[in-house]
Amino acid sequence: MAITKYIFVTGGVTSSLGKGIISASLAKLLQSRGYSVTIQKLDPYINVDPGTLNPYEHGECYVTEDGAETDLDLGHYERFLNVFTSQANNVTTGRIYQDVINKERHGDFLGKTVQIIPHITDEIKRRIKLLGTSGKYDFVITEIGGTVGDIESLPYIESVRQLRWELRNRCLVIHLTLVPFLAASGELKTKPTQHSVKTLLEAGVQPDILVLRTEHALTSDIKNKVANFCNVQKESVIESRDVSTIYEVPIEMHKEKLDERVLTLFNMELGEKPDLKKWKNFLNRYKNPKHDIKISLVGKYVELKDAYKSINESFIHAGSANEAKVNINYVHSEDVSEHTYVDLLKDSDGIIVTPGFGHRGINGKILACQYARENDIPFLGICLGMQMAVIEFAKNVLKLEDANSLEMDRKCKNPVINLMEEQKMVTEKGGTMRLGSYPCKITKDSNAYNAYQTSKINERHRHRYEFNSNYEEMFVKAGMVPTGINPQTELVEIVEIPKHKWFVGVQFHPEYKSTVTNPHPLFVSFVNAAIKYNESKKI
Ligand code: GLN
Image (tube, protein in one colour):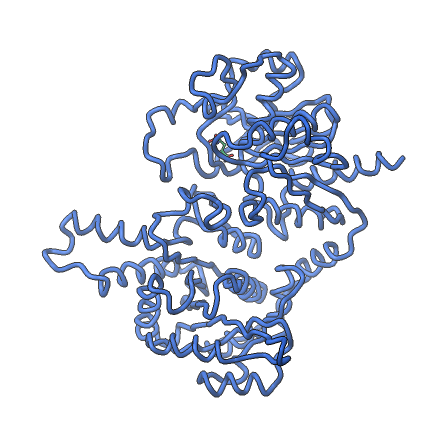
């Protein structure tokens, strides 16, 4: 059994400095030195989970194997570590308060006054230590969302202060800040970092390591200055310079000796040098592509790239696997109309129609499916994207003009996409969809089978609606066939048009399972079909 060490990652100066990427990179380095690591994200908002949040707020909602709707940083953790996360890896203030209030209602506090300290902080600490109690992990890295000094973050920082005291030398705090460059004077400025560390000190927490985001190299003088003002050793001041891809960060952090520093401060063996061969190989292929393709991504949140985070990253993984540069042409589904679709989608080597909810922009999605189908352009439809491909086929091939999803039209006469039976009684919104991993059986000789090279797969879900099997015979006769079925419920998980070059719609979300060392087979195969299509156009 490992004696678990706890590493906290806090952030200061501004948000969006990349605590998630620093946490994931450190975890990767420790993992590649042979240690077992997991990463947890604490989010200071009052939603119980991000499942009910509009993607415009915090970007994509990531789904784990066990069906937790989580922050998108968990996607980074999985993509870097290639290890599944779970509900325990993402905790929000809402969940903490909900648990404490439920206990209070249950009478568990025996008449005591329930307070932020100790009751809320105790619950936060319990959630942090929970991952360590399994004995599975040498390290639990806990990323604290938000920025030091926010009112929302206070109970979390206070919990870190208490845990430092309780865990003593089994605990480290890494603080990530920004060193801005003032172009007018040509100088890097350390004052915001000093102030940020002071704020942390006011809350009783002395950071052990400072990671400084910067656009320019930090001189030895700057590092000395920060070390002096912030009570850390100079070796514990780590530079994190902007890089062209997030996947460079582990390599850079290794060069800066972040992993060595952590192990030294814990008095642990440095052990073998990290084995990053596969990682470097991935980067090498990514940076030296032999092909160049354009995939049009049709969705209603394209203004905010984070809304499609896992899809974007899956294309990076699949691009590297195929030695291809995948250029994503983001197309707003509301911009796609009878008059614009050819212009917006022309020259696409592949078209992907994204997941989503509600009717905004669906006509554009349907037109994109039609354009891909009629022009034999490789197509991948994910969740709502698959449902739109089914509706398009029903309207234009089966001539069921009023075909629709019950989600869009409650009174629809031809609901080719139906509300799932188990969803009919559901009224609560949070955590009530069909969520998480379910098995699927794939038909031999289909595109999906050729991609996965197996007939038994498990994929993650997040939906309420499904393909209506009453229409299956009509679809099959006309050339759109289910090629993946849930073996227990017979729910249609995959549809394909066998006559088409590569036309696959999936009810599940393959993007959640693509990682650097395990690029997702469907994305790899889709990118491969797009490369072939691109080359066929040159002949
Ligand atoms: N809105 C659709 C459903 O609930 C699709 C969901 C999705 O794309 N994740 O079935």
